[in-house]
Length: 126
Image 1: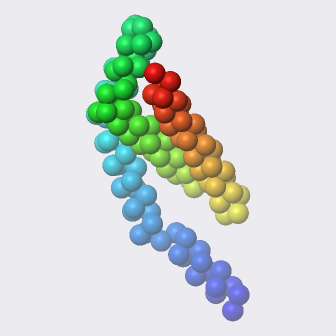
Image 2: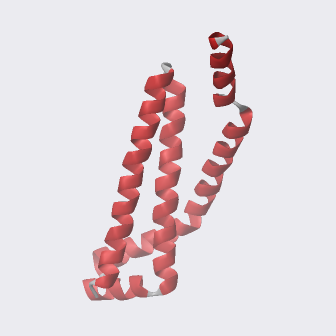
Image 3: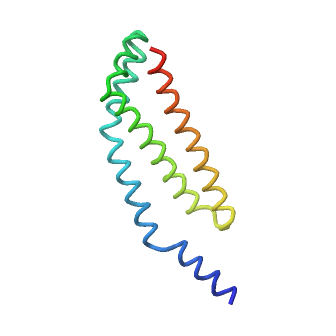
């Protein structure tokens, strides 16, 4: 009886439904990152070539702020999805796989929150 329950859990874990959603989230974030990266390139150009005050003024525009925040969220989520796929493909032991996915998701969450806090601190400091 315990063996059958384990097989049902494994079948649910590897179901096609969750995989297709994961696939589409990766594709949507990849497509969203294409136009949002233009804003990132402009921000990096400002940060490298313009005075700090001009860069902060550019970033203070609501459209620019939203674009950079959207880029940050999309890139962190896209990276977390990508690393999860690599872990699922190359880590064969299920408990280790789950632990590795949870650990990388936590790391990406911390990185994302830190990046968003940095943007907010820059905007509040002006």
